[in-house]
Amino acid sequence: MAAAADSRIGFREKLGYGVGDLASGLYVNFFSVFLFYYFADLAGLAPAAIGLMLLVTKLIDALTDPLTGALADRTRTRWGRYRPYLLFGAIPFGLTGLLIFAPLDMSGTALLVWAYATYTLCMLAFTAVNVPYGGLLGVISPSAQERTSATAYRMFFSALSGILVGILGTTLVRELGGGDEARGIFLTMACISAFAVFCILTTFATTKERIPPSANNGSVTGDLAVLVRTGPWIAVAIAAILGVTAIASRAASARFFYKYVVGDDGTPVFLFLDRLALFLTALAFGQITGVIIGNLLQRKFEKSHLLIAAGVVKASGIMLFYFLPLDAVWPQTFVQFIVGVGFGFLMVLSFSMFTDIAEFIDWKSGLQMTGLVVSASIFAVKAGIAFGSAIPGMVLGLTGFVAQGEQSATALMGIQFAFAMIPAAVMVPAATALLFYSLDRRTIERVEGELATRRTASA
Image 1 (cartoon, helix red, strand yellow):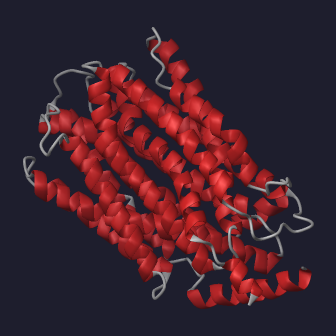
Image 2 (cartoon, helix red, strand yellow):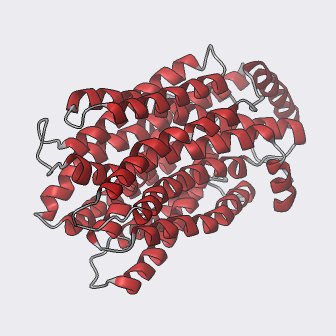
Image 3 (cartoon, one colour):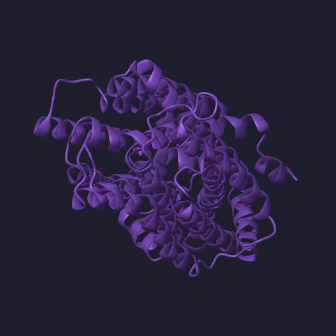
């Protein structure tokens, strides 16, 4: 009975844990919409150069993400293994995000070097906070049901970040900039950075680590060797990366789509929302709906089956949006909401599946490597954003895009390709990967039961 009581997480703690993802969610959503646009259209850097930058920085992430996870797994402090990274990483997280959009008198190569340096620093700070934050989910409770519930809170705030960027972000850029989009982007990012620091510190103050660390974790290389041989982890990592890539490509292309394909001038179409804001907000509300529904359905259905269904919903919605008339504002908004529902399924289920995999590895090999396992979820988000943002960069570079100029028919088709065709296509291998996910509900229940017995005996 005591063990069961200790596995439960209260509302306040779930809320506090979930708020932490509002910080990273605001960064992710703001970068997805404005980062590529800021450098490629406003600053005039070559789209392919920015796309390459986003890909190159992922080579660094491929090394730092798992190393941070392994380091967090081995950290021992009075605050726990993962929480101290939130305490000491919050301020660098906020400052590095702001530096990217700092108003400097630079252009050409100098500005590209600045973009490389600041974005790399920001992603390192992102890793230092979000890999341990993800690892914290794995030790917040020994119950998969409770962890999935905490994940739902997390994904709610992740989706809320999309709403805030869609409604307030685009509006703040317009109002704070006063006609200067670059200045508006910087001042809006300043607001986001300050609020993100507050959210991360709130998570540190309200959460607790309930699963004690093992006496010996083994070597980092040994952990990595076990991880890369774990089929379920590979399957979910591939699906998560491609699922985020689809959304990120649409987000990075959206401003170009509305500006150059639709010919939208930013005039509000509903209250104070312009078409881009309405597009982003519909996705975020759909994501929240998908998180809620996905959290309920995972109690009765296999998570991998639900994720495959979510991929079908996303791909179908993206293609339907493409065939709608350009002036069909409300049908487009509804279809984008449906795409968001599929994305919400992906986020809530894949993140909880990573913690299930960490428990499975602990049960099978006796190695506690939650931070390392969950680092894949952080890398999936960052890699998905990078690939998704690089797709428009490469496509626009190949099809003759001209910053702030008149676009050729080929360039307009390139925007459409990055906005719809490629995002829908990448969902096919994402769904295929999940066919190889072997951890069903019965297996997870067995893992939970046997691990609980081991931990009780050890205590």
